[in-house]
Image (cartoon, rainbow, N blue to C red):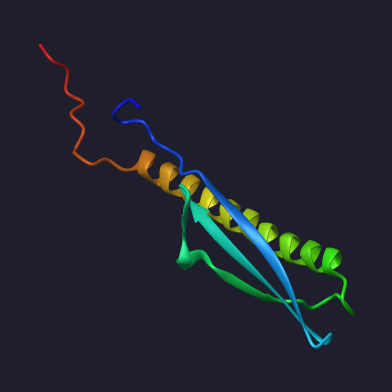
Length: 102
């Protein structure tokens, strides 16, 4: 890898559904970054819209909620970065010298 280049971390998420006494359904998400568990990214979800033991619908709800949130957070971060770049373009870190050189 060349110096100065940005390396993206390889990661993946795994989801699991648990049915507790057929009335309480919960899900969990574990994350791995570069092949190692990222415990700080572990999440638990309560299933809100699914009635009964329907694991496929439960996984659908959890995945939809997780990645909708991720997309919304990315959009906010992108908008914030665009604002920061636009603001930085209007400001000077040092006073510009507009005098002509002789």
